[in-house]
Length: 219
Ligand code: DX5
Ligand code: ZN
Image 1 (cartoon, rainbow, N blue to C red):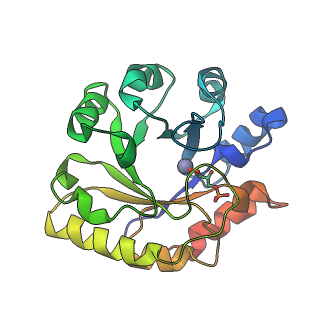
Image 2: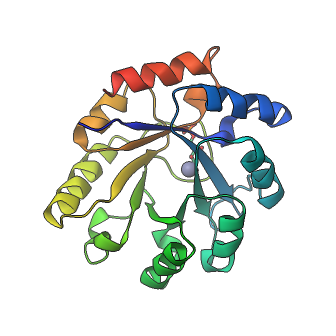
């Protein structure tokens, strides 16, 4: 069985000590940096933008997984490539021509991800699953860290995993929101490949240990 990837969400880092927190992730067992970009339109919050991602990219030594919670993401695909994104995830709900958007992301040499809000059924991806490198199932409503996990997520993971297997696709399943040691194992058993964790990691006294624990729990 392959390793579950752990992706600490930088949204929950201490922005006044960003370099310290990035180095913590670099030296931990974490696999990816999860970067939440919010525009105040698609979601009711604004996180941080290009100059901050540029600073993160200068220090980050692991895969940069960018989660765009913005309207009209097509406008910024090449910008995020230049800022170091390895995986670029757009919201299903923000894309009128999702197929075209995914092709544009891949043409820039990035992995293409699609995020689904809690109300969006995984079944909407049936006809495009083979073109998607990663599906991010939102297990909270996007916009804020520190919210509680929506239990319905397990069913969505099962259903998506079944679709991916049936379509013989290599798509990874990522879970984003409210991930802790209480739900990590069950999510992986349901089919999750990547777990994002923000406040659970950065809110801990020993984040490195929390990351190591998540790796063990999901083995
Ligand atoms: C929510 C973001 C998440 C968030 C997760 O809109 O997409 O990535 O940072 O934070 P926690 O783990 O605290 O729910
Ligand atoms: Zn996110």
